[in-house]
Structures are given as structure tokens and as C-alpha cells.
Length: 392
Image 1 (cartoon, helix red, strand yellow):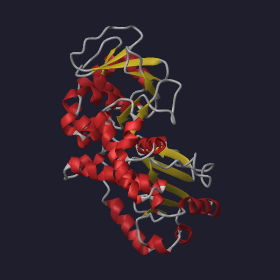
Image 2 (cartoon, rainbow, N blue to C red; image 1 turned 135 degrees about the vertical axis):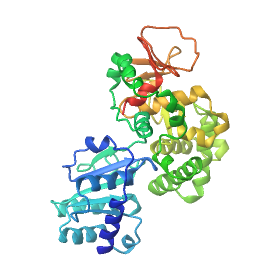
Image 3 (cartoon, rainbow, N blue to C red; image 1 turned 90 degrees about the vertical axis):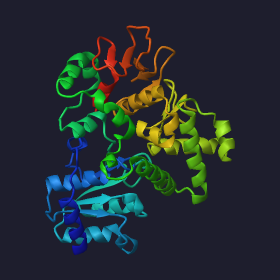
Image 4 (cartoon, rainbow, N blue to C red; image 1 turned 45 degrees about the horizontal axis):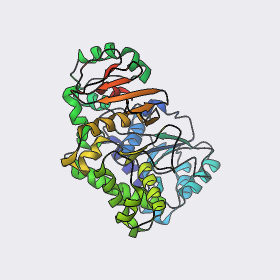
């Protein structure tokens, strides 16, 4: 136990989260079992350690552990929790919980056996804590940690503390909001950097960002999909090739028959793999209003713009990048469907939006909202695209 405490103390003392994530204040920390999911690389470990540092410091009533530790190859979570509880432990933070076989059953046992203990764990975005988990579905509170928003990236790069805005606030007050921000910084000076490398916090590390992201993407497929979905290793190359083909083809409806032929599998398997890639937050599926999986999507897009620049940097289309940015930033709190011939997306089934490149000629329709790239400030139903990066 002392070895775990020493590691915890070292990690907490050396944790320095560059941006305080809003999720810290959105979570109800009074709940006894809290699951924090998120794409690999978005900062879940740092988030747990920041919570420990902020709320407990090095107080031994709180302990951070990682399921990568070989100790858990020969010892159960229940036995460890029993020992921790006996030492006065009150809050256990478990990182990468899915690395432990049978984790959900044991967390249920801990929940029932130690009513004074709180457990917070991190897991992959592929995990379906409520839908697929009979052990925890009725007791766990699940949250999602996302990559940096443009607002968070801008705050980090400039030292500012801009707040987020709701979609309603942006639509109704975008001119005033933009003027307030422009009085302090020029967001467009930072926007292209965000599109290229600002979503994943590890751009702060002194390593090649694209190489680091490619490594992370491989881990998403190898661990988050194969391990959690229990897919045999021999199918790894098929899933990777499918992701590459979807990325290179750009945002359009997938030709499932052709993809099945290309990776030598069935149409049904292709659709399952597409769903796994979406669950892992590597792609997004866009449907017409009223349709959903398992129907074929009308468009498949990469989950965020950073992925686009890593997979096919020489063929990145500006319009595709802008559409992907808009979809990704809206994804947290809003539903997006395929737009009609006059719009790019239908937001929340009622609001048509068209994403416009710099210099695009637009037929100004009063019922469409236009998100304008390279516009510092907007007017009426024409809103700067960058400001939608302030939604979270």
C-alpha cells in the first residue's frame, strides 16, 4: 500500500494541468460511483490527478491507482479497496479501469460493501456504461471528457480566461460576444493552429505532434476497439485499412459493398467496424433526420480536424476541415443531421447551418444560419465560424 501512496504523492505534486476543464464543475462529486470516459489522449489521467490535487492535495484519504500496475494481475480490486478502506481511504481514483478483467462486477461489490467509499474511474469512449453494463447501469454516473475546445486552446495560448457560451447566446448575441473577445485577442491568429493540433492536449509535449497522434490512433484501434470489443488480433489490419479508406475518401456516404471487398469481409462486418470507430471517437456518422445506425450514414467524417491532418496531410480539403470543426464543436450538446441542398447540417432537427469557406458566394436565406470562415465579426444570420469554438 505504501508504494501506491508514494506514487500518488509524486504524481499529484508533479501534475500541472495547463487548462482547468469545465467538466470539473459539471460533475456531481457527491455521487459514489463516477465514470469518466473519453477518447485516448484527451487528458483523462491528468483530469483525475488535477481533481486529487485540487480537493485533497496529498491527504491519504484519496488515492490514485492505474490498472496497468502488475499488482492487479495477482490481486483483486475488492481486496485492494478493502485494504485502502481499512487505512482510512475515502476516495479511490482508478485510471484505465478496463485493463482489469471483470472490473464492473468488482466495482459493484465495492459499491455495495463500502457505503462510505467513493470511486471515480476513467475508461474508453468505446465503453457503454449504462447500455451494456448490467452490473453498474443503475448506480454509475457517466461523464465525457472531450479534447480541447477552441476556447480552451485560445485561453491556454493567450493566458486569457474567456468563458463558454450556449448556442442560443451565440446566435442572438454573436456580434457583442465577438467584439468583447476581439478587444483582447485576435482569434483568427490561432484558429489554423487549433485545427491542425489543438484538440489533443499532448501538443504541449516536446515531441512531434503528428507522430504522437498517429501512435495514439493506433492505440485507439488496438486497445480501445480490439481489447474492449474483444475482437481477435488478426482483424486489426482490416479495421486500420477501413479507417484509412474512410479518411481518404472524405466526407461522403460510404460504399459499403466496395469497402467490404477492399478489406475482404462482409457488409455487416464493415458496418459493425464503422460503429466501433465512431464509438472510439475516430469518426462521426451523419444521418438524415429520422435515421440512425444500423442504417448506412449519408456521410462519414473524421471526429476532429487534427485527425485529418495526421492521416492525409497532403490532401486536406479546406471545406471538409471547416465542416469537421463545426460538427466536432457542436457534438457535445447538440444533435446534427445532414442538411438539405441549401445547408451543410441541420442542428437539433430545426436549425439549418451552412459552413462557408472564405470568399464563398452565399444566397442569403433568412432561415439558414451561415458560419463564416475568416470573418472576425458577423452580422445578423452570418456568424464567424471560430465563435462556435466557444460552445464548451
